[in-house]
Structure formats: structure tokens, C-alpha cells
Length: 314
Image (cartoon, rainbow, N blue to C red; front, side):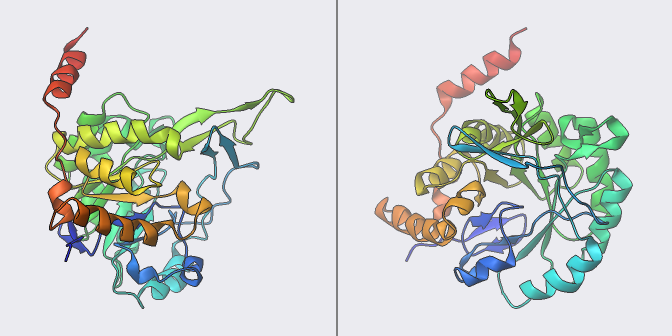
């Protein structure tokens, strides 16, 4: 029998398939058994009420999606009262995604959600940091290290740092997160992008720009997962463009220990349980006993030399 279990920084998952934050909610329990998933990852919450960005918030671009939702939230009180109790009925680990505008706000919220029934905290450090003129925490190693230091002091739960593709210092940011206590890296959030309606000459999103997700993001996120897996000693969770079992396997071969599924769930709500079944069959057909045999198995000697050359070039 194939073993699909993986370890994410001390947290055992029955399989490596889980939702991406913002694409999963309690309503999916009416569509499939949520106990099937490796983990449950909640929509990102903030401490207080948050309305989100102006509409339109979503548009399609070349088979991918642009969104500028703006993290609408009912606040931590409503989350602890209604959402956490719902997930306590499942044995599947619960990962709470949080966001903050400042380091102090992040740390305070992290402490508040570290309650019974929560197994890990995914910290969305890809969000704007108002103390750094709106630049995301994870843009720079220094700001990544600073916020992670406070987050680590705020909780004993495993911390998953969600990184941004909007940086030219991927490996450095990943190492900074690890050095300051991250137990895993989620790679990655959406890619800052834009689309314009040529008929009206207006941006397609009410917030002008938004995050690219879906198939268009996958090559970028896959490259980042590869880099982060080699730059750190902690597990990497691949996120971006996962819609087929081949996508899952590709991330695992690149070095990811697990994957998150996002945009594909909007198209096929039962995509995650299907991927779990297909992954089990894929591993069995390859003659492997465990999905862990795939992790980091990429044959990359030539590519590694090319990466070193590019990073060394002026």
C-alpha cells in the first residue's frame, strides 16, 4: 500500500494535498469529505473588520486569474467563535492563515489564534507592511527576519511563512524566515500583475493591480520552490497553478514536501480529493512505496551550474 504521509515541520499530514488560503471554506464540506485532505488552511484573517478592495475584484487572463480581494475579514473574534469550532470535528490538522499591517499587529494576532484546535499558523508575510511604505514583509530578508522574530516569540505552534514572488531575493528571504523560526515555507503567494480592457481602456480590477494565480503562476512558483528547498533545511509547500497530478508530482520532484491547491478549486470544487486518488495511483505505478521518495528527486546538475552562473553574473 502506498504511503502518502508527509511531515511538515513536525506536523504529520496524511497526504501532501491541501487548499491554498482564500480558496477554501466550510461550505466545501457539502461537496466532499474534508477529512480526506492533508490539512485545512483557512482564509486569511485580520484582527479587526476589513471590507476588502473595491470591485471588480476578479478577472480572467489567459486561463489564469487576477484577483484583488483585499483580505476582507470579520475579525479574530468571529473567527475564534465560529470557524475554529467547525474544524474541531475533523482530525485533519487546521492551519490558520493570518495577516497584519505591522509587526506588532502580526504578533498579537498570532498569539490570539494560538488556541486549542489550531495546529499551525500560516503567516501571510506577502502582504503590505505599512511600516515599510507598503512593501511586503517578504520582499526583503531584513523585514522578513524582523517580523518572523516577533511571530516566533508570540506562539509555540508551527509557523508556515508564505513568501512572495515579487522579490529578487528569493533564497535570502527564505533563509531569513528559517533563521528566525519558520517551520515551513509556502511558495508562493500571487504575482503582482495587471490587465486592461482595451474597449474601455480601464483596468480590469477596481484596485488597478492584483495577484496572478493559476497556470500562469506555476513556472514562477515552481522555480521558487526549487530555490527555497535548496536554500533551507525546512519543508517547502508548493503553491501556484496546481490542477493536475503531474503538477503535484512536478512540485515534489523540485523539492516541495506538499502542495496547496487554489484557483483550480473554483473551477472543479472536488479537485483536491481527485488529486489525492490520482497521486496514490501515480506513485504506485512508478513502483514507489512512499510519496516521500519523490521529494527533491530532480536531476539538476546542469541546471544548478546555470543558476550559479546567473547569480554570479554582474
